[in-house]
Amino acid sequence: MSPASPEHPAADSPASSRSPFPSLALTALIVAVFSLGIGVSALRRAGQLEARLQALEQPKHFPLGEAMGYLQRYAEKLYFAGQAQNWELADFYLHEVTETSDDIIGANIADEGVEVSKLMATILPPAEKGLQEAVAAKDSGRFRTRYAALVDACNACHQDTKHGFMKITIPERPSVTNQSFAP
Image (cartoon, rainbow, N blue to C red):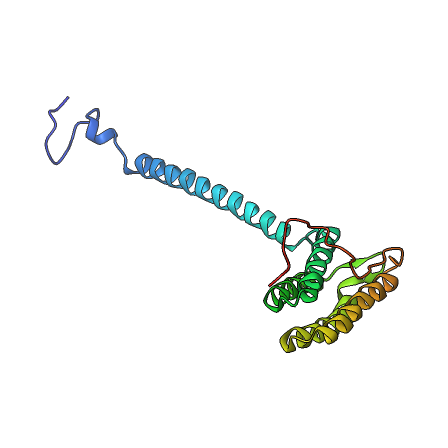
């Protein structure tokens, strides 16, 4: 066996047994595994985002009964504020009535084939506008007339939505006894 020279390394020396290909293959394998991990993570994240998007696209349940209860309560308080000629308080409760009815209208509710929100959008705003004018004018007589028109609008809507058994009346006494309606 001849000694190894720099031009001719020995056949059994470590430098001659090393090939650049195994380390390139190992590097490529590591990169592929890492990339696969990133890809799987990205796919998982995309799946989660898709599920969230689908959940957002689902129609949300609107608590119509609860909103109607608030509407009734605000209308009652509006009535007693107007009766007491507390126009600032009446304006506040009229705003709450309008805001609540706008929420119901904006929810696009259909129930048992009846377009509740669309019907309400045609019936209630004119009554609210009449009340706004009466409150702005601080006119007690007009307020009573316009409030009666609001009650009629509510009952007409109940009739049209197959809930005619739900009859609204002009309140006789406040159901809330811990609030003064006096100015």
